[in-house]
Image (cartoon, rainbow, N blue to C red; front, side, top):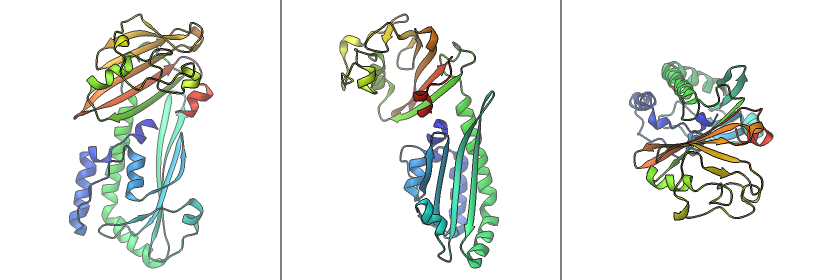
Length: 289
């Protein structure tokens, strides 16, 4: 689901081409797709409302007149959307869902549309006959993109061949990798912290909010403490400056790898993190999937 949430529609040539084709056919003014920091925020910026947002299931919906050259999307709460009956509109709900399988996961997306009266139903049928081939192409392209990104190999994946759990997260940062890297190498409990829950992970000491020059040297074999007390930590197993940092848990019962990969994106950086666990996922891990 993390990959789907990070999708950027404007990055797809197919999506851009089909949207432009629709604009020409309907003589609509061009409206740039909003970049609000991910797929779901971008959809919300367009007018779609969040009906359900769970780790493995997302539902969004809106009331609209899709046949208009530049349609407006009106978000409504779930109960209000179900009860909406104003003539001349279509209620649309689409979902994203991830189902675990024995050897991976299955990604499912569905869309349902209901017209509020016979006139709107007839208009929607004519409109759908026109745009459905493009919608099918967009959906196919996005599913292929999600599959490719979810299956891509990152540094450190080779350490644990059959992980019991995998957590991926991505974020776009508006500075180059050279500016992000120093924040990674200084991580660790009672170092710069984990930039997380400091009460639990850093002895209640606030994580650093600036670069610490004394913590900028990191080598394979170094151990970054996991908690304030005990021997638990992450051993550095790969250091590729400004590209990748891979850590490996020193606790046998909680063996896992944690990769931080920096990918240049124009003037910025896409930071990709991946945790691969050799043990069954904990409640905390499940909550952040």
